[in-house]
Image (cartoon, rainbow, N blue to C red; front, side, top):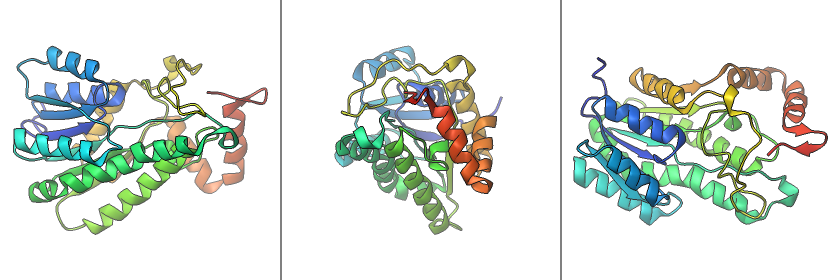
Length: 269
């Protein structure tokens, strides 16, 4: 049995659904001490009940709030004694053409996806430095290639990638590893909770999740990358293909992405 994560203290944002939940379950099974937060109190309560007796701390928090992030990080350190690994996973997407979207939608996406990661990392940094631990952010292929109907989401992930790269450079030779993960399409709740042009959850998505990587498989890849102290992780064949084509054949990528996300002139949401 792999003992790398045994007794490691891992803080994960957005742990009540999707990739975050899969990470929580996987890490608890490997003997880690896990702290997670989410805006959904009911799901966190169920998570705690399912793991009674295991070293799991949960807290209701909205990562777009600095005070909520402070409560999450401080309570984690108080209960477990520190933080070895921080996984910035909480995120929200959007589904609207820029011309139709309220500006507040883009601001909300940026506050959660970018500033939520900044807040938690800033607050946990001293503990991670002391332990020569790991800072991980779950980004997206949209952080390499802007996606139509998801302009605010793409902007937040580009910002996240650039910030993480700068942070990694600042922390070279400190013993801290900085990793950003870019999943392709993954089965998760993020499409259902994506914001429409008015900032409301869009609900059901027409995307076929049967062809996507599962959250559990994605979580396994992320944990292996943490153990190997990788710099970046780009997942799925289509994701790697998109990054490659966009880098070397950007005009072709424009056409391919446009054809993928628009059917009969209508945006796929």
